[in-house]
Image (cartoon, rainbow, N blue to C red):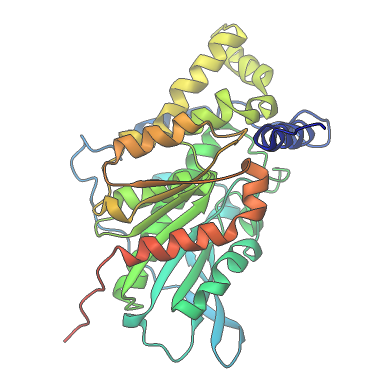
Length: 360
């Protein structure tokens, strides 16, 4: 009788998927156009401003006024789509591709329930999640528990994708930091809108993989307590692009050649170390502890070929009071099979928040 190590099988599936996606000639590599030149320097400076030692990291989010249209409605629910101008400052907007200047959201809400008795969670995109559909399917069943779902289309994704970019393969390293910074700003503004304009009683933010890193950053920086729910997420992009499977999908030679054009000659190992230094800006353990760390629930996979266990535990250690829940599987299989666990974490995280006092 042959025994199969199921955990190893999940891990191997991640690597087979990664090899197919990132080591074949079917799609281009990440960062084939290099580092991003002056844009990267701008972002390195601006992202450092997010860290807790810098005064003003709790600046209020920018208020937005999305323009809404109804997509469909039933007896119990309504789906709307809204657009608004990205809330990045002008320096960042000039660095973003024009296609990314307009943000787009889907908003699924229960009908006939007052917003002060409804919670709403903003769902952020993982790598390759270009549409609203998957995240609406994740959030849809929560309507029965009076939890609304808001889905943000990421910069560089979907209709916001630059013309020259193929799929999810960002052209420059600076694009990854731009995507993250713009997502954080827009999500904070959406939470602010849900609070001040929508009147929702509780709010949260969640995301899978890359979206989970962004969710953790938003939860850290938001001025009021929100449920923070990172799923299958590392503590830093270094883990994905320098240690994990995505390193096989990275254009290391193009990055080295870009540096050579700038009169900086490096070995490939030195190029990888420079990438580590740049992506250390995405290390969430350097961000402030969220206002209510008890409402932070990480869901991680036992045999994740993309995200090692130590990466998840580093963030839990940095945020005392947060919780890690383990699901059996790898990155790909958990993404497909454990939506119920993700929903349970959303419900439990929101339950750890107090309801907002209704206005008099």
